[in-house]
Length: 502
Image (cartoon, rainbow, N blue to C red; front, side, top):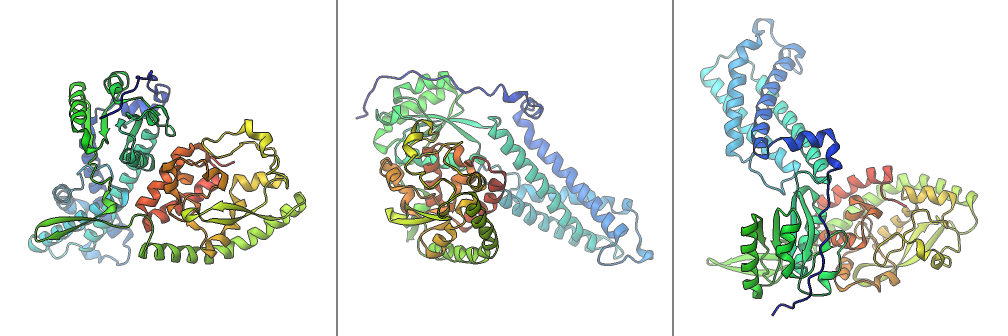
């Protein structure tokens, strides 16, 4: 039986009216959502025609790779039917190949791959038609150029669309506002995915749960909205587009009631199946003569994945050390000239599976910094068990520069080489900080700590501790080599611009 608690007052929804003063946002919000597919199709057809025009210019004007015999010089008007045919063929090819099939989790590379595959099919079809019905004097190379330029132009347009979409969603435009029902393990799994994948276009307003501890405690920026009996009031108070229901299977009557309330309010409802609280990454589905067999498999980074990750760490550390060494020598000299004390200091941190280890850093603070920490307790700007002070008076002059660009962490390459850390992973906390973890926080300790990680490239010190943990656990559950490479590529700009670092 579900527990009942007194409904708590609800906060007013966040307004983004100030953001809409931007001319770009004003322009986008005036366009009807139903128009976007037609606008995308129209722009694609224009770009395909432009690609053919560009291929003609390269072939007959620039004459790359192979000169054109003057006797075979041809006006563009002669190729005009082919350009129209290419537009028509690619229109059909794109539709049959699923280029315009909408899917929230489709990335840019996947979409460009679909475009490239459909374009290759369309251009090959056009070449065959030309061989059957055309003249031999027509250049075959122009069709190859056309395929390349179509992929480049449409790939560039998709990149621009993804950037625009990200810009708008970061400002609350073109997002689906979601309320989460259930803040247990499955509910937090949904939170992790929403926090880690802002490109999916979901903005979590808050969550409800009948557990009195959970329904009164915010998780980062995700607001606790009270017990399930508040659900109808939430739908009336907040601009909710969708509801995601993450309740255990025993609560089927409650789920039916919530679905009815969603239907009455015009809110789209989703139900997350509570099958042993497993995600697709945690299940292996086999077949026994037509009978599906579901078994669990290892989550996190283990087996061959662990070997690949370790090899990547060693290769990058070996190459990176060649560049880090001269920078490190300059830092050592600067620290020596700036203040007295050791250049490198070690500190006990908690690593994988709760195992303590000594982490190495360039000293960025005065030598008695630890003893003075209690004096600055009132200035702590971090949430949860962390301790962060933006203008920490304990920092040295050189230390301010080191901390701003994360150069104080270069000695941790030694920790990575020794296998105590990885290049990518959750940041290791102090033992006294780990002692303050909530039960669900401990899952971030299931993988090796890292010099950088998903939360660092998502907001660094601007995120709350709970949000950091959500992103760390998402990383542990969804690790891939591509994710690590993506985080490494994003780390450079984040460090260079020092966003959220102090």
